[in-house]
Image (cartoon, rainbow, N blue to C red; front, side, top):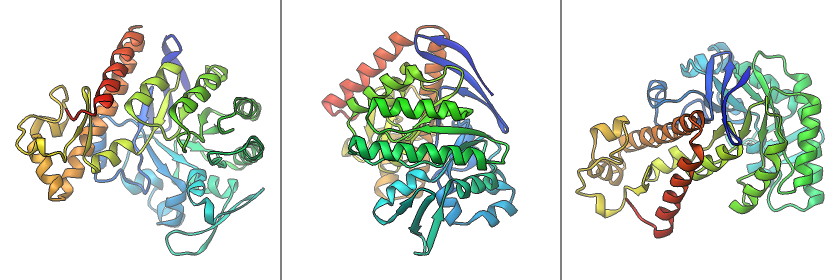
Length: 371
């Protein structure tokens, strides 16, 4: 299912063999929450280099529901995506609705944000839905601990997530691989306890959840630095919901294999474009008559055919094409970044390459430049 191909320090490249294809790691997964990555077709996603997509159990359960998706060939057939799909269990979405959620030891009850109906979600229900979606990678149902949380609250939440992880494994009858999720907030002892318990239950891969929920970057990096060396080397490691290009580089340096985040597409819709020199803020007036591409080093469709001036115009006019072209660019950049990291790991030159990039991005952020 997973094999390490090359290693450079703690970083590694690998191959994750799934029902719908082989994924080269480290990999970034675009978020297709409702069965689509906003403004992009499956062909465009393939063309920018997407290997695997993320779908959302919670939202697809509410709309259109398991009956519709089941009748239309699972999520792959429903959205016409032939490659692998990872589905989140719904735990993070419950976290986002926590002010209106009732949590008990068996699951959660909440009001649907779609129509206000009362909805029940539990480990078994989440597993049934992910079976219907025919996910390649299935996430256990967990409780995402809010930040900040006292040690006592975080411990109680972590223990509930372990119980739900065990129930998720017992309930799952699908053909995908099942990932456990390490919780424990910013407390190293709780993270270690969570990891130990998940390893005892036995999962195909392990994710790190409950980060990027309000803690500062130093706290997140401290958690990762303490936790990742304890994780089994023969299992894929997935850092959930993170993040910026610098976050991805630091994660790879620590030994993370899989990432997802809404950042590249959400930032594209807000006119923030990632380049090898820093962030281009296309809404700035300086781009109004700029004939250059977003990034002269980029080979994406947007950079090969359109100027900054044109994208500035489309964005100012709120044309839908702006979202499409800028999302193509940002996702292409993220996938090219991951490909470059894989290359430098294989050549054992990652340390110097990563240091140069991190310094370049830090300098761009420090001066607030718009390149």
